[in-house]
Image (cartoon, rainbow, N blue to C red; front, side, top):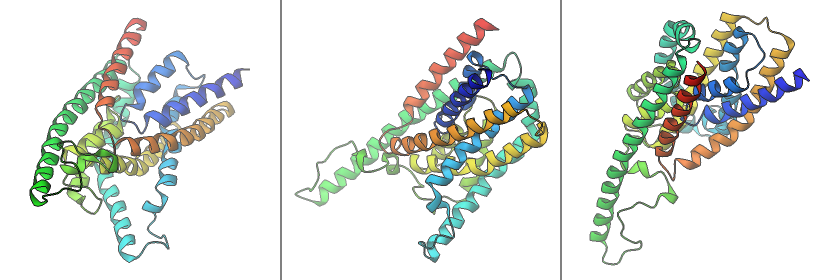
Length: 316
């Protein structure tokens, strides 16, 4: 019976990881809430490793869904396309440098003094709120810029054609693509410079603070540096591959492999479920950003922060 209960918990952790890892809502905050009500019956060392390694399941979903785009050896690609693919990987490596440096330097500090402290929930909540507000403000500004840009395009189009083939409107029809491309400087990975990739990596490094959301910090950084929502979202997926793989290795080196059979089973189930749910979550987010902005996620972050503060504030 105990084994079955822990497996059910592992499934739930996998579901939460698969959803929250890719949506810019902070997997840490959601894992904290879930563990508060359904704590895993495992050692502290295993739990610290589990929270990181379970993300490998989510990474496998990225490799599956973007296999063709990330495969430089595909026989279906010509020489130019293969070169472009190698370029994406090179930018992923450059973008991973800041997070790798910060992670090596500060991971132990944040794990010992914040993640496992009595006030860790306050740090998580503060990060949720700060980045939630940034999302809301950033997208409010972007909506005005997009409206102005598309209105200007429509006026120019109407001026060139006495009889138009489309209605003249100040609102871009977003059903055909990412509306943010109207104001973005980077709409393809070819246009993404190594300098911008490194700058985005610096934003990713901010995710060392619990509650920040790795994908959230990357998306915000990418858009502030001129990327469209689509490029920002996909780059967040790709940057996860080396960072999460490396971080998982570090956790195993730090805490070892001496876990019980139950703990290994929990990890296995969590990985599989996180992979399956991530496939759905990634497909959802890719479609979502082509028709919507990130305001809803900003509002959600603030709401979940309030929930965390209330629940943990009462229990502490």
